[in-house]
Length: 413
Image (cartoon, rainbow, N blue to C red; front, top):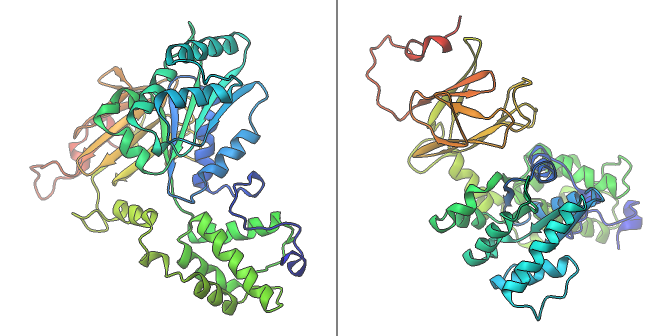
C-alpha cells in the first residue's frame, strides 16, 4: 500500500468506525455530550439521528471506549427483529442464553437483572444502532423497558441512533407514549467546508503525518464540493486520491490526482446529487413556501427587565442552555447545561424542558412541553423568553414597533 510513500504508520481514511480517528466538530461534540448525559440522568432516553456516513457509529464506539467501568452495556446493531427476538438479543448482550425462553420469561429475567445491577451500583445502558429499522412493535418494547424502575430511578439507560427515518417513526401517532419519554433528540449534520479541511488534516495527523501537508491546498475546496462534508464520502474520496498519487509515485496529492479519483469514482458534485442530507439542509434553509429569509417567529430574551437577546426562529431546533455548545447560551447558575429547546415547524413552535434543574414555567406553572402562542412569556431560570409569532396578523399603525407591544417588564430600561 501507500503508507511507506506518504510516511504514515496506518491507513488514515478507512471506512470502519475507529474512535482513534474521531474528529469532534461542534455537531459531533454536542451529540457525544448528549450520549454522555445518559450516564448522568436516568429518566427518559436519548435519540441521535443523522444521514448515512455522518459518523453516528464512530461516536458510539468512542463513547463506549470512554465509558466508566461500572457500566454494563448491551449494544444492538442488528435491528430487523421481531419483538421477542429483540428482547432475547438484549439478554444475550447481558450474558444470558435466552433462546428457549418464552416472552414472559425473557421479560422477567430482564427485569430481575436490571434491578440486581442497580442494587450493585452498576449503570445499565442499552444502545441500539440503525434503530430506524425497528418496527413499531419493537419500539413499544423499548418503551416498556424504559419504564423498568426502582423506587428512586429508572433501571435502564437507553440510546437510540439511526437515520432520519427514525424521527419520522417517533413522530407517528402510534408512538406518542414513547416519544414523551425521549429526553434529548439531536440530528447530526454534515461538516462545514472549514471542518472538512480540519477533518482531513486530523485523520492524516493521527495516521502519522506529523504536520506535513499531504493534500495540496487547492484540493480541499473541491473535496468539499464532491462530498458535501459527509465523513464517509470524504474518507472514500481521500483514500482514492492517495491511491492515485501512489500510482504516480508522488508523496503529495495534487489537483490532477483529485480529478483522477473523481473520474474513477464517477462522482458528480454533491449539490447535484440526490443525497438526502443536503436535501434536508436545503429544506430547512428555504422551505417550499418561502424565500431564503423564511422566519416563522422571534424570541426576546430578557433579564431584570432588559431585553438582552433577540433571535429569529426558522424551521429547525434551537437549544438553550448554560454552556457554549448551545444555540443560545445563557450564562447563569440558574440555567442547566442544556436547559430547554424550541422546535420550530412551519405551522408550530414548541418549547421543551430538557430535564433541567429549575425547569421552565408559563404563567407561573411549570411545564415540560408547551405549544407557544403569540405573546407567550416563558420563565427560564431568572430569565424570561417572549415568543412573537411572525405569522400572526397584527393591527399595527405605521409607527408601531414590536417594542411598544411588549409587556413593560420586557422592554429595555
